[in-house]
Each structure stands twice: as C-alpha cells, then as structure tokens.
Length: 341
Image (tube, rainbow, N blue to C red; front, side, top):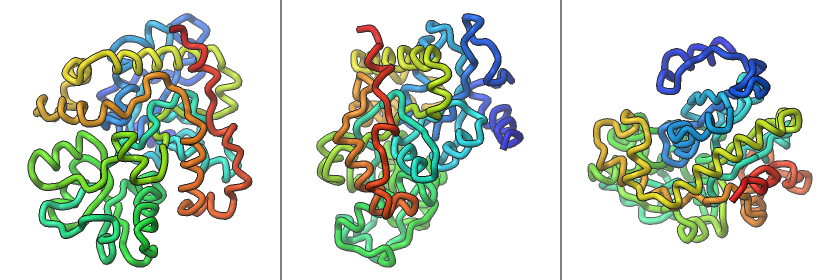
C-alpha cells in the first residue's frame, strides 16, 4: 500500500507536490506533525474546499504542512486511511458509519456540506424519466460499495424496484464516466461537477435528479444527507488536538470565504488544469454546485441520522446493525465550534 501511495504521489499526484515527508516529521511551527490528506477526487467540485484552502494559503497560515493526495474512489481512499498511510480523507461522511461496523473509529471533524452534491445523469436519448424507469437499465456508480452505489440503490428501492431489476456499473468519474454515457456503457449514472457540467453543456446528458441543493436532496432522499467532509482516525485526532484544531480553523475559514465570493472568483483561485481548457465551463460547474457548502463546518444531527437510515438498508456492513451504531462517535463538532468568528 505504501508503494502504491508513493507512486500516486509522485506521478498522478504531481498537481499537489510530493515532499516525501513522513507523518512524524515536524510541521511548520516545529512541533506540529505534517499531514497527508487523501481526497476522493481532488478536481471534483464537491471536494473543492480542500484544494481551495491550500490555494488561499490557509493551511500555511495555521503553521501546517498539509499534503493533498488524490484517489478517484472514496471507497479506496478510506483503505489508505485505515492502512495509516494518510492522516485524513476528504470524502463522504457515510464512510465513518460503515467503518464503525468494522470495528474502526473514524470521525468527521469538519463537515463541508449537508447534501451529497451528486446528480443522476441520463443519456441524451434516454427514456429514463424517473428512478421507476431504472428497471432493466445499467446505472453508473463510482465503484461498488461507494456512496454513489448506496444512493443509487436507495433511489431505485424508493421507486419500488428490487436489486435484480437493474445493474450497477463501475463508471468512475470524469472522462471515464463521460465515455460510459457516450458509448452506451451506462444508461444513467451518478456523478458530480465538473463532469455533470461537461455532459450537460455538450448535450450528451441531462440531469434527472439534482442533489446539489437542500431542496433537491430532501425530495430525493427524504432529508439531508451530509456528505463531503474531512474525516480522520479517532485515535489520531485524540493524540493531535492542536493540529486538528488548526485544520478546522483553515477549512472553516475557506467555507466562509466561499460563501462571500462569486463562482468566478472561486474558480480563479483553483489550479488552471481543473478547468480542462474550458474556464467558462468550470465556472458553471462551480456555480451549479457551490451552494452545497454549509459555511460553518458543523454536522446537523438529523442529517447524520438520515445517512444511517440509508446505509442500514443498502450497505452490507450496516444492514442489521443500525441499532449498534453510535452516531456520536462518527463525527465531532468540538473543533469547528472553537473556530474564531
């Protein structure tokens, strides 16, 4: 696993740099540990606060050495955290619940959003008008066991379908997802911006279900569904409270910055390569998704309960264990609550 991480860091992760520091090296003030954070798709708008914090210089302002790495699947990113190769993951909160059923204590320390930020996209000539039409269709998800997998199953079941009525297909994100829609590999699929913006702008896809807003999320899922977050191992958090507080300070400051700036200003701060040669389209992607961020980093208790409800129906690890899950150990508001106004 460590060899794989090193390879990712020094090749595909060249965007973020590879300093080769270990988690035990001194941080910017000589005492804080350096921190590796794996992002489940660093160019996805749903995880934008992580890279934006780096771009704004807020990690450095807190005296932190933070190295952002990337892995396209949240399910894979959590494995790197469990292996101890990174100290945090920017990914969906639901992983903390799933992992607790495996005996792992992982907690969200900064909650970026109260909604998934996902959209269900259908092909331009698709006859799918609602989840009830998923029957007999191939539905794209990031990977098996991912958050998009569970949400897709929830939408289908809510529409009255059984698991055997449709097929889920690993479609990844970005260009692999676009290709899957384009060549008929999938009939519909769940993805985020900027992938969604690319599909819609080119006429290759249409938004069927929009979970980038609170209204759309409640309509689709029956309540809030906290998703994008920074989650970390409980033990590491307990051993490094000062470092975690500084992470919270930096990230909440970014969430506030997002709330007070226009999509054009936000997009301009991001690496140019994220726009993939189309700055205007990237601005649209930011515009369409930026409202998902909560501005304060706080978890809403009712949202956490709704995530547990969904997972208890579709996660193989959570089924039958709903009453055994202690939600209070899957997130903490201790650090974001202490961030200065």
